Image (cartoon, rainbow, N blue to C red; front, side, top):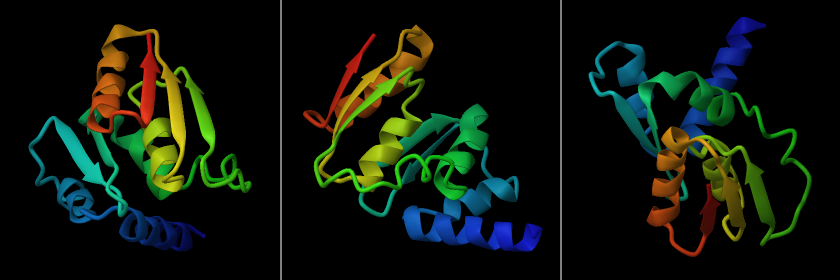
Length: 130
């Protein structure tokens, strides 16, 4: 049912995002910023323009990638993200697998800028290509 889905989404928000209050500020229309900076419970920064908010919710609140990444792939997996866009999958994987190494490829300059920033925040963890 719809209410169950909403409750699960908010529980995911609270469990996964340390500054989850920002979501409610945005939902109430009180956020005037053009971009967001969320942080996962384990310290991964997720920064993105406001126009990507729907994708953020799908991935981090509604578990869009959890079925794909549900299998036990070990403590230090190597993850290859082709068509990485601004790095949502990269951020999701980094938050789910603390010991992972990520190789991300994004050919579009505009998107690559966001991906590149994620790589410079945690050098050695991400390798990004254009």
